[in-house]
Image (cartoon, rainbow, N blue to C red; front, side, top):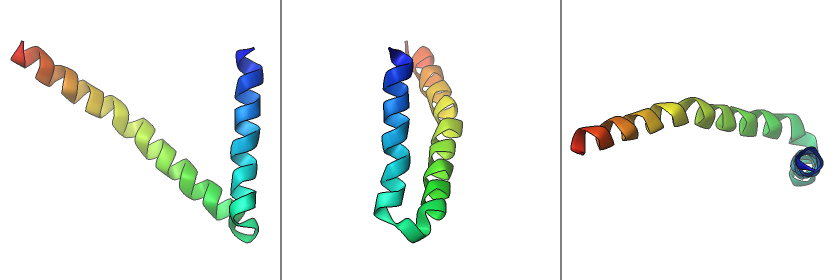
Length: 58
């Protein structure tokens, strides 16, 4: 069931770029993928910092 829902979500996400700018679909996918990767790289760093600050204050 999770795979089905994931597939439906991924299909809608990919088509959305083509609907927004048919000429620039590749660029839009690249930009959104880059933003997603930046968030994926920074989130563990931010979470680690928050947890360190919480343990010091307790």
